[in-house]
Image 1: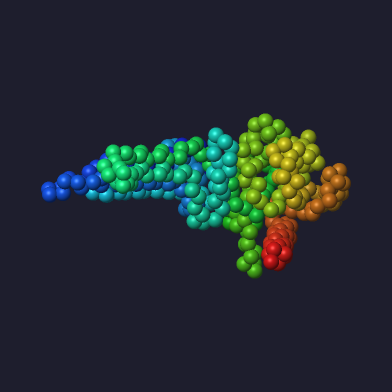
Image 2: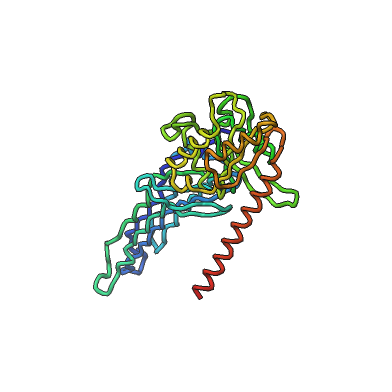
Length: 352
């Protein structure tokens, strides 16, 4: 299935039904009076998060959605039926934006989340509503109001705890296939990953977290070089970034230090928040580095970057060092959750 993570659709909620102009006409009842009923309300439009939907590709083929209009009122004080609501299923992790105002309408991050995106019109009033002591035979009615119309921009952002960064061929796909059941395409040429992949990493004690692999970035990605930065939005929900560096590049001119700096520059240009996110350095393909210079080369990279965070030396191909990094990531994520829970409890206590 083709991966589509952004789409625009036009939605129109149902209009309200018009009120009815009618008078009671029966034999032997000469002054039956007004009996026009109200119209029905128009149907609303909702987005619902569904785990069975994995992409926004359906919205590339159907772009217009319209809810049912409310029925018009009828005589004998019969009100029109309400228009049926329209429910549109979207992937979990979808954000809904008003494309004209750039307003974030809502974010559906859990299974079954339901978001009202267009309100149906109000019903019109029948002439029976206008009857009074001084107006016994009103000929006044009102029309139903139109439903809301807007252009929605749907953006799907993968829900992952950890995101992988790196230049093309840094070994991200190999790493995610080593630590999870994900099977992304792995080959000895750049841009084998054309769309994001998710993998669930499960430890032996049944604890788990989700890791996301996005296509590699190159210098100038913010201007559209390579595959650009269109997939960086999938890292904005993550709690930790693992920056993979190829320590044995096929191109000898490729400097590991410059590789890290290049990626981080593109992150900062895309988003200040993403550029300052927690990041660990993962020196990959250590199996291809001679043992006698391995430690010296790693230390040289760390010193030149003046790296203060965690550093790991691994081989995604052989699995060397992968268990250690997976265990540390799991502990880190759990410590974040504990801190958030503690802060929430303290905040509740302070509010009381």
